[in-house]
Amino acid sequence: MFGLAIYRGYIGTYSKGDSKGVYTFTLDTNTKEITDLKLATELKDATYVTISDDNQFLYAVMKEGDAGGIQSFSINAQTGALEPINKEITADGGPCHISVDKAGKRALSANYHSGMIHAFALNNDGSIAKTVASVQHKGSGPNAERQEKAHAHFAGFTPDERYIVAVDLGTDEVVLYTLDGENVAKHFTFNATPGSGPRHIAFHPTEPYAYIMTELSNEVIVCAFDAIPGTLKEIQVVPTLPEGYEDLSQGSAIHVSRDGKFVYVGNRGHNSITSFRVNEHSGELSLVEFVSTEGNWPRDFRLDPTESIVVASNQESGDLTVYSRNKDTGKLSLHKANISVPYPVCVAFLSTPL
Image (cartoon, rainbow, N blue to C red; front, side, top):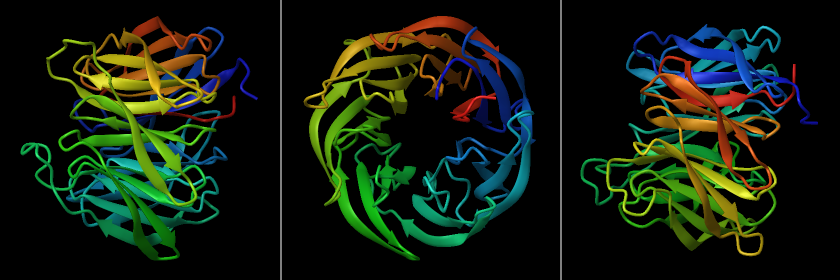
């Protein structure tokens, strides 16, 4: 299913400098070269994008004046063009994260500035039907500069989609919710170490583990995830930076390989990707290596559909970096750096080749 081929990717960006919206490119998994890099659609602060499981639709966060929301597009895979379908605006500014369920029926957004989570109903044609539920996070943390209030940074689903999972940097919490129609209810709260600033979460594809990336403490919190009762329990905390490193760095993205053998995280400031091997019996992590992103402020990175390549987005240096990935060792080898894209934030791929 994921043989050597050409795949289409998309890049969400900040609307600064020369950046205009969502960009697209093609990746040849044989030569590892990125080509056909161009603007797919203009959209203000489309910093995070996600693609429906059927590869038909792309959903992006966006800003519109002082408000913001999500925008849906139909995808032309051959040309990369994005055709706007519709948008749903909320009054609390632009979100920072968006996800869609496997059936393409529900979308979730997280708003860092307001600390709110929104749930949206989606139609079969990819359009956004309406906002069905909203949750306001409340609280703060010990970091007065970054945790003065709630800052929701991630909204997604547990693997079985029984629960919504929201990660809040401001309150040091990971919260599981139930969503029944338009009724959302808090189900379980995992409390991270005060001041750690959890940012994103990634679940193991087959085993009952979850991995929480912290932005402020630059750590991965390894948790046992019990899917039926919907609970998280900490079993390990590992640093993502080299021992003795004390300069500014903030944790960014976290991804688990499809075979569940490796976890990868991004470090902004240290400007690196850290690779960990997963213990198949305990879910615990052991360090593999640190690899430079060859640019400044890696906001995101993504394993391509074959998982033989990793593409990292360096926000402040305005470029992409491409690596070869060894599936046996988990190690990354630099293939090409300094592929120019203005203020890249998020990388996403269509899962089927062109």
